[in-house]
Amino acid sequence: MFFLLFILILISHAIAITKYEESYLEVPIDHFSLSKTNDTFKLRYLLVEQFHIKGGPIFLYCGNEADIKVFYDNSGFLLDIAPTFNALVVFVEHRYYGQSMPFGPKSLNSAEGLRYLTVEQALADFACVIDSLIKKYFSTMITNISYPIVAFGGSYGGMLAAWLRIKYPHLILGAVASSAPLLQLNNLKLCENFYHIVTQSYRNENCSQAIKASWEAIRNITKTHEGKKNVGHIFKLCKTLGNEDDVGKFIDSLEEIYVNLAMLNYPYATSFLAPLPGNPVKSFCDKLKSYGTIQTPLALLQAISSALEIATNYSGTTKCNNIEITNNEPTDFAWGFQACFELIIPMCSTKEDIFEPISWDYEKFTKECIKKYGVVPYSPNKLFLEFGGATMLKYSSNIVFSNGLLDPWSSGGVLANISDSVVAVLIPEAAHHYDLRGANPVDSKYVLDARKFHVAQIRKWLNIS
Ligand SMILES: *[C@@H]1O[C@H](CO)[C@@H](O)[C@H](O)[C@H]1NC(C)=O
Ligand SMILES: *[C@@H]1O[C@H](CO)[C@@H](O)[C@H](O)[C@H]1NC(C)=O
Ligand SMILES: *[C@@H]1O[C@H](CO)[C@@H](O)[C@H](O)[C@H]1NC(C)=O
Ligand SMILES: *[C@@H]1O[C@H](CO)[C@@H](O)[C@H](O)[C@H]1NC(C)=O
Ligand SMILES: *[C@@H]1O[C@H](CO)[C@@H](O)[C@H](O)[C@H]1NC(C)=O
Ligand SMILES: *[C@@H]1O[C@H](CO)[C@@H](O)[C@H](O)[C@H]1NC(C)=O
Image (cartoon, rainbow, N blue to C red; front, side):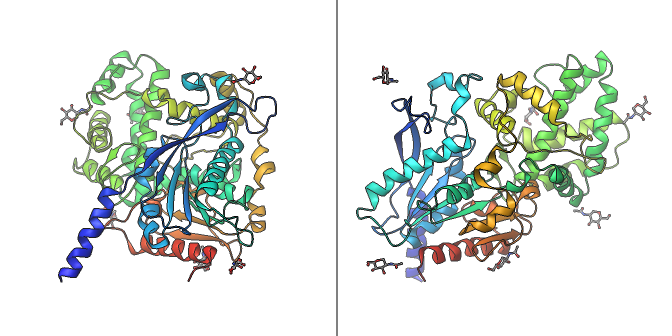
């Protein structure tokens, strides 16, 4: 009994004191040009040494499109399993996000500043960090096996983890790629999947009809100046809706919230992209249903606005809702650039979805990208040339692709086993890279099984039983 208690205290203590050391590595701004070899910048990474014992592997999280601390805080799985592997844990920031700015504040200037924001450059950054870690932690060259280094990543970070294994197999032994919608890149065939899955999440909670009806209500009511004012008032917008453009932006901002709730539909409260309650889709739908039968379009909008407060006002301290804010964040600017030029993911919605139907128009998309960033897009085939498309995955090895079946991004995930060592894990009832989150008492058996699967694969790669 005492022994058990002691272990519990030790465990909670370990979780409480897990600390990273913030480090920086000088890396080339341009890895692929000889003419500028002395231009460098400081790439940030977070190092957790406390579980590491000499000879243990390195677990490397491939940072994606945000400050690396966001991923550190939301990917506790790496830290949870580090002690049993004696692993060193490293979270590497993606260039152009957080503190890792090649040209300082000028980095996010269109065209000129964003030139070196590419997948290849980001992977080469990771390779530089790995090189420096190898020199520091593996004193002797390992010649007969690959270095015991495992990459992890969620979402775009999951694609990066898989690509890191594909591109640098001599540095990376294997990759756990969670919720990586690799197959959706430039794939018009999967265009509709994403919004279908979002819709299904709301349909499961019986509130898809109300959301669907709200668009027509908004369009109708905002036809007049008075109506625009009313809607602005109902949704507590910071600025009243001035014109049709604003109405479009307002609708986009609502759609973004619905998508985020579906993506972040975890069973406990989180604060990943925004503070949210547990089961946010159900929370929203339950609140909406508490209004009973809704008679008028205005009453519908009132109910929706109130129900949406579980997302927009979870803390109860939001003064007003800004429909533009997401587009102005530096992170969204850099990600918008990547989504425009390299990571092109066709998305469209149909009549069956809770959203207004939108078709995919590549030309229009390209024009808007050029207007916003002043850069001509890469060839849409660039990433296929670089890493191979879906059918080429069979030539790789040691990759786990995991997908939560509630996650809209499972729309483009690798959902079937490719070979003995490029394998897929499907996680029922799980949202966006749930499996990479730290352990939680309410985790389902499905998620625990997925994590066990990852651990078993990693053991196999590391050749330990
Ligand atoms: C790079 O080296 C060249 C030649 O030595 C020098 O003129 C230039 O200022 C250097 N650039 C930076 C950013 O240090
Ligand atoms: C690698 O070589 C060392 C030294 O020769 C040997 O002890 C070890 O078993 C080898 N490992 C593998 C995986 O072959
Ligand atoms: C949704 O409605 C159906 C049919 O009325 C019902 O069987 C089901 O339990 C409801 N689900 C929820 C989550 O309310
Ligand atoms: C929108 O307006 C049209 C015509 O003015 C009307 O037929 C329709 O019922 C209205 N829809 C809503 C949701 O108010
Ligand atoms: C947020 O909640 C507080 C407390 O209930 C309320 O006073 C405020 O109006 C709400 N703000 C928004 C934007 O919903
Ligand atoms: C892939 O193979 C593993 C066994 O190696 C199995 O456990 C898993 O369920 C398979 N995945 C899918 C999606 O069938």
